[in-house]
Length: 86
Picture 1: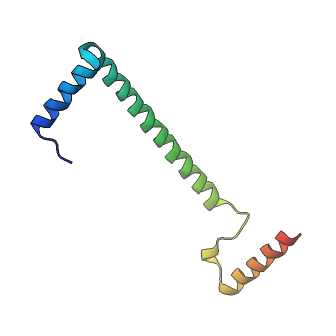
Picture 2: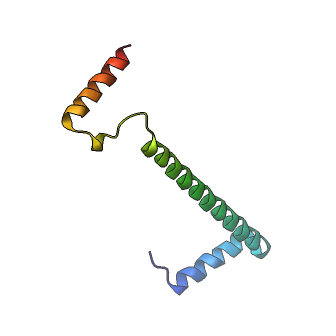
Picture 3: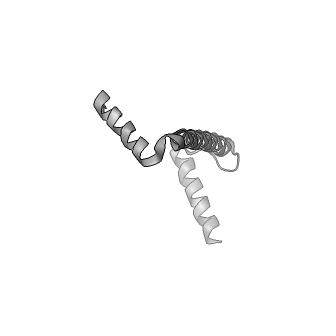
């Protein structure tokens, strides 16, 4: 969506009418702080996701499926099914 000069001027005029000239800087500052906090939260969530993925991929408890032969995979599935029944 592309805004032309006329649309931007109209939006700014409506904002001045709604919020007044004194509250617009405060509004812009709070929007900027909220955006920064959101970006920081997203960055932290991505880092946590990477750490969890690294933990899962380096866990030694279960063999990796893509490294197993068909026979070994079938045996592992059988073993896990038996473990669930217990």
